[in-house]
Each structure stands twice: as structure tokens, then as C-alpha cells.
Length: 161
Image (cartoon, rainbow, N blue to C red; front, side, top):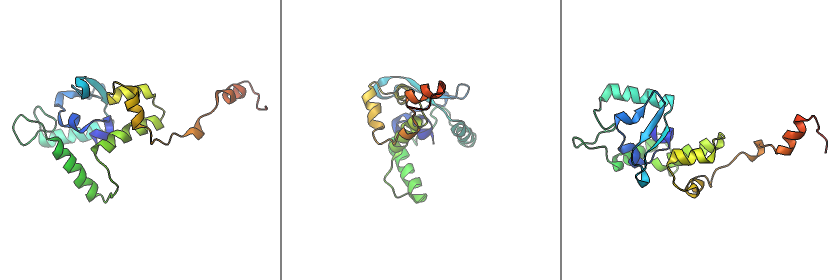
């Protein structure tokens, strides 16, 4: 859920600390993501509720998802394996990974009208071309986009050519 909610990489999920969840501002701090840059991304209300329930049940102390070894985060492989097990349990046969959720996050934001530069910042991409690669398969709803000429003519009450 957190991968899709904020567009996180699996390594970013593994290295989340409890203090990285900012419920007041509804954002997640990603510390030293790819390129060793910090960034903020989205925290959905639904994800926050699940994280609160998780915290009440497991009471992690430092790492949001602690590993088997004391003081260590959960291994990325463990997250990937858990995702695969849940995908299979849900009967989803389509090839998908944690990274697929990151792509879906970006695609759905674009389809909902979010500016491409905001998506770039949320994903932590230094280069806009990287963000555009994520969105190549996006089925942008071009039919819902109106020409500015039509908008201008409608506003002025002129519908004829």
C-alpha cells in the first residue's frame, strides 16, 4: 500500500523510519533516495490508517519495517517476496512487482491531471526524461482535452466556424 500511495521504490520502503511518516502534513520523507537526495512524497489517508493499525499491533521502534536482525531494516528481497505471495494469493496472474506500483502511482496521477513536473518531484527523478519513460504506456484521455480555440469560442458565445 505504501508503494502505491507514495510511489516508493522497494529500497525506500525498506529504509523508512517511523519519524519519516508526517501525518500532520500527509507526506512521507524519503531520506537519501536514489542519487542520495531527500524528498517528500504523498501519504494517503487510507495508508495512514493502515500504518496506524500496523504500529499499534507491532510497535516498531526505529525502522517502520524492522528486519530479523536487531537494528536493521527489512530486506528488500523480503518485501518483494511478500508482494509476490500476496499477488498469487489474490489470484493475479499478470506479471507485476513492487516497482509496478510505482509506475501505477505515476500513471494514475497523470491520468488524474497532475502536472508532469510534480510527478517528477514526487518520484525523485533528477531528469524529466526518466519520468516520461514511466508514462510511455499511459493512455492519456485525449478525448477529454478541449482545444483552447473551442473554449474561447464557447466563452464568447460563438459556436459556428
